[in-house]
Length: 429
Image 1 (spheres, rainbow, N blue to C red):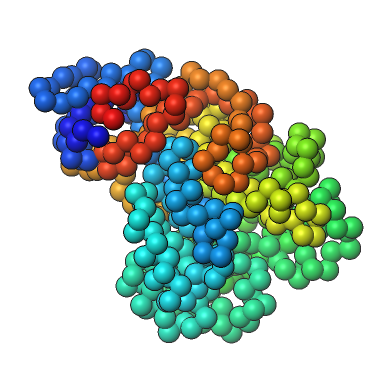
Image 2 (tube, rainbow, N blue to C red):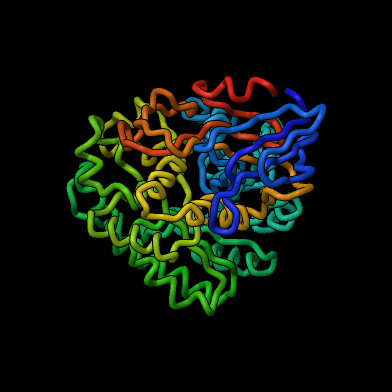
């Protein structure tokens, strides 16, 4: 691939689209010109008017699996799925097998990640030995993920010690907010149609309030991930002035209720996720809160499993589904349907999560070129068989979307191009 090229197309700038030429040399943006621009010795990519050039997208919550679960996903297939979804940076979750919650496994993970081209960040799990936190921080760790099960496994005292250290080392505590006691004592029949009753919405509210109280007491940075109900936002907004707190949600919580999902798939397990999909009322209100700016950013919660596992009976079916290749098209569809602005899409799935992961992917001179090219007029239906992820299923199967990821650049390298658009990039391939 050539190291010197100019890509010309519409760029979103100050709330409007402006045609610009981005000049790239050895992976870096060396200049940005208004309109069409050419330069000797540079290859030219002149994009049609319907195409948009924007900074790459960032998914702060993915599960890349690998290790003992490479049959579900590997770091490589996770990266390929990310690039196909226009994503140039990811935050990988620690509930792998073995878990990324000690120095030995963390070092193994970081060594594997050296082979990747994507910007890779990892959120570690609750450390078995809290004395290892300082060394983890020196390796670049910025965040620790707490799962509901961690409270049982490690105990209250261990978690409290962790929270104090989080403040000391300026770590973000990412929490999956569901109260495990309320889930364990559910009396509902274990069936997919009762999943959102078994893992009741009150369990999410109680856990959120508990974490907020702890953040107020100990002063650590708190991030509440994949909220499924608007009530969590109602808990968060009043305390934003007192603590450093952020919150995210996912496309599936704002676009699918549990009943809507079960009605559209032929395998009920494809709808099982934690926290569960809620009812239509929650979905609609959560989407409203998203449009009003009450959510800091969007994540996919990309959680691949094998099709065989997802076809299991309720008690054996793992929770989660792939999302790296559907999140941006779904957000673009909300933009095309005038539910979100394009600025909203950029803030929710690029600007704010890039700040959260502390990565610089701005389209500016002297920065590396992390770019996503979008065909803003392409309508199609989601077909999981085309996924780069190993998990070739989705609750959004046959969902109509508007806006396709055409190409993805990482450090000026064309790392993905959709087969329908190969000719456009032939000059640099």
